[in-house]
Amino acid sequence: MKKIRVLFVCLGNICRSPMGEFIFKDMVKRCGYENLFEIASAGTSSEEAGNPVYPPARAELAKHGISCLGKYAVKYLPTDYNKYDYILAMEERHVRSVCRISPDTEKKVFRLRDFCKQPSDIADPWYTGDFKTAYAEIEEGCSDFLRWLKMKGVIE
Ligand code: 4NP
Image 1 (cartoon, rainbow, N blue to C red):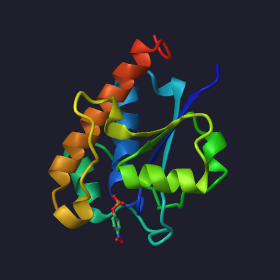
Image 2 (image 1 turned 180 degrees about the vertical axis):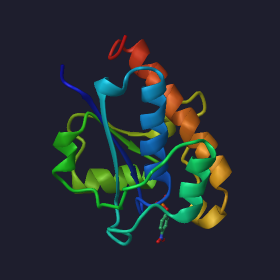
Image 3 (image 1 turned 60 degrees about the horizontal axis):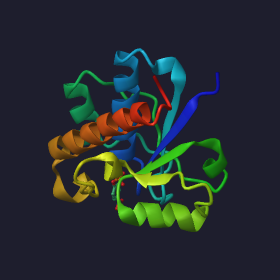
């Protein structure tokens, strides 16, 4: 069966989008859906490309028993658009950047928290220093996205 391909996107790919990638990987694994998905993350900027996940983000994931070992930042490329079914950005400005790099002709670019009751951006913990809140907001976004996929009949 064809996998559901999900790409999380933020600015640097060292904080929020890797958190999304590894939280969602952990979530689908716990639900027994891991074979249904292909999950990755990228940044709209190349500034941090090649760097590992920012230590406070890594520490927040570790608090929840989630490892992100082996993840290094990559830049979002125009060719990524066709590689994924859902491109989930952390902020509206990342949606705009993604759409500048690759026009959203198939309407597959969303904000992660567009699936939540109260859609919102995810505040940048690089500036707020609040990785606990970022984790909670990303976790809720992932959970509501998974619920939406079920509601849409994309997964049973
Ligand atoms: P991220 O966080 O987009 O969640 O990975 C940031 C990482 C780096 C910078 C900003 C945000 N920066 O300005 O270098």
